[in-house]
Image (tube, rainbow, N blue to C red; front, side):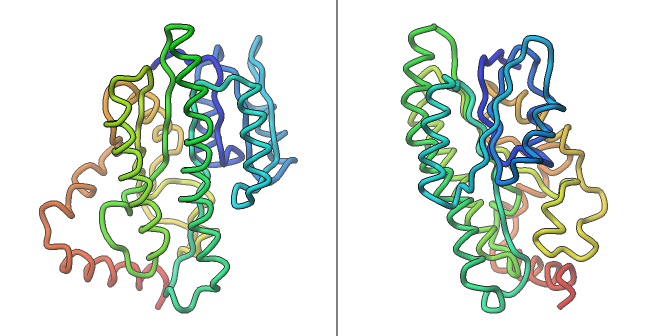
Length: 260
């Protein structure tokens, strides 16, 4: 794992975001952001280590003014590792989902990722060149990024954007002092499933978020696409299966999960 000095983690109050805060070395200062200030303060206490600086900023990343505030604070913080972890999605038929929920998914999973990355990366690169260190960028996509997923259409499409965006960035920046990783976890033991409307809140065999975060941090400087644990064969299935057949099979599975 590379030794980054200051990391910004979005969606830091639980799940994989919280796990990143725990798995980063104590020498890495943290800026944590999420919508709930009380939970951010709790997470800051859990992430505290002797000599570590931890700052929090409550922000709704679907709002331009909140992203503006976060960018300004992150530049003052001299962030050199950006972890775009915040994400949202709603399980169910696209036409049955409220239009504002679908819009919020795109704003958080796509617009916020592009906006924060575009505005913070130049400063990260400049600081890396000046200090002769390396910067880091992790974008949390999903195994859902590898295929169209009925009953989860907008979420899967947004994560496909995240994956391809990050892969393209990695190639564009191959000669720059920055390591770029697209993290593609599958079902993970977080609150995401319950918020998204999964039956029983999750799936059997879900991964531990600490293991997922550790795999992503280990991937920096080694690989561009990180599929944690035993999910690599699942992620590769769209390559070997006809896409229409795969989409149909996923549709049956997702209707069962959604109880439809």
